[in-house]
Length: 154
Image (tube, rainbow, N blue to C red; front, side, top):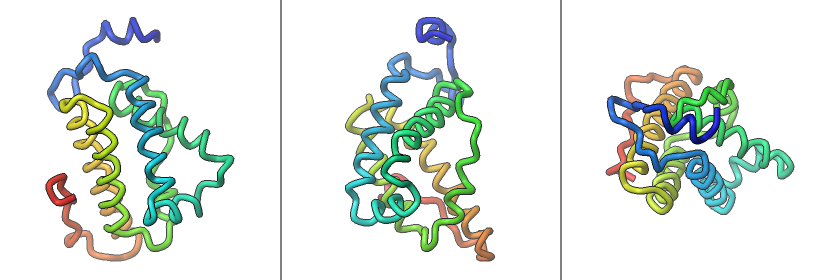
């Protein structure tokens, strides 16, 4: 489907019409900008670099663009399972998710109009909470104590 054809279709996310400004280029800019921050971050870079070899970063970025395109634009390009690779990361904890969300918020606030940045953040906060619940469950920990991370707490 071409960009022009896709934009003739109204996309509704959480009961709100998706702003027309959100397109594949904006998603690409967000993904690449965000992961550039991760690769320089003292807390997250070591964790990611243990899992993603230097030559695997370009395919990973493509996959993440597909993921966010599917999530935000309903393109259906991503058909993977994002959780399993995260379950194997030793030591992955709340501090990592907080930093991930902090960097993500900085990226979307810098690159997107406020309404679109808010949509990205709503999704990111849900993903982080879902992953944290799954990690706790996978580790045999109580999920009852896993509180959602809020944007205000970052």
